[in-house]
Length: 487
Ligand SMILES: [Zn+2]
Image (cartoon, rainbow, N blue to C red):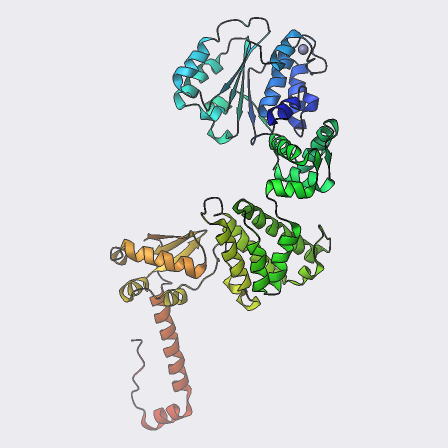
């Protein structure tokens, strides 16, 4: 059994067979029943959610000789010719491979000709966002005044790349990612008809792995069915998809909790498949999330070792954060296992008292610029210049405001140095330093220092002038006491 067979066999042929897109199906069937005259449709949504399948069903419905309640019959010549890909009035074009202006023109030249045997000629352009600007422009001219016998259907995963002029001429239909529950139901139905046995937990694993895509669910199923000899167990699914075992994930967290590095690295030694590292991160985060939810709500979501509940909720947050920060790199990182090891080492080295070292995703809002400047240990001259600056934080921008005469004295190397030190000090990895002269520098470290000095002097002066000995001196000798100046 090949992938093509299963996917083709279970491709929906009627609107009622479409999984998880009720809102779109309803809108389309209503427009068919009411005979509303849309001549361009745009199907958007992530990969494998059924965009082109829906376009094909719509094409059949528009041309069907026996349409009943907005459903194509799948028995008339028109329906059959589309089902077996022999209709000459239905053209499916992959814009990824035919994106150029000459190909688009070639296509548009066929538009004036009447359909050979159907009511409408339908052009389905998949991945339409791939068309060049020139192609879109020439298409637009036709879309502005399409001949009544022509209907366009576009499908795209990249809605934002479609020009607004095109969008405004289409009935836009946004397909959802298919929910895990809908995928489960559909797979369960298909398996029973295909006489494939499947454990309930295995069904959940496959539905989760499909990530909202019905096509992926079928591709994965195909692979697993052939591997499992039609008897799908969760251990087969884990093996084929590289999904780590629950015990392994819990073992990692348990050893982190017990600070047992020896056992932790024994577990890591057993992992020899780089492709499973991302799943380990994801599953570890999932477990951390479930433990946290249980700690706060007492609703136990999944089964896990109750001793894991003893982990400090704050530490769990930090573990989660560390996973989140590092998983970002995993797809491009040459040594995924090394990345996992380093992440776990960081967790292992973590102490409750060190919670303050938490890696922030967002910049801390409040900070003490004079103190931070002091701790940055920048070069002496640069530090001196910065004494007259002011600093603000706006998301990941560190905005440094200086008087113009100081700004010109600062070079790129200074800024780079400052940027690197701030990133490390504030734990914001993509922090950017922006220098300007826009803000007043009244709160500069130098002014604050001077202000503090002035205050100190005033306090001293106040103390002296209110002291008995001073008063005595004044009264006895009436000397001219020189006031403290601020220098
Ligand atoms: Zn029909």
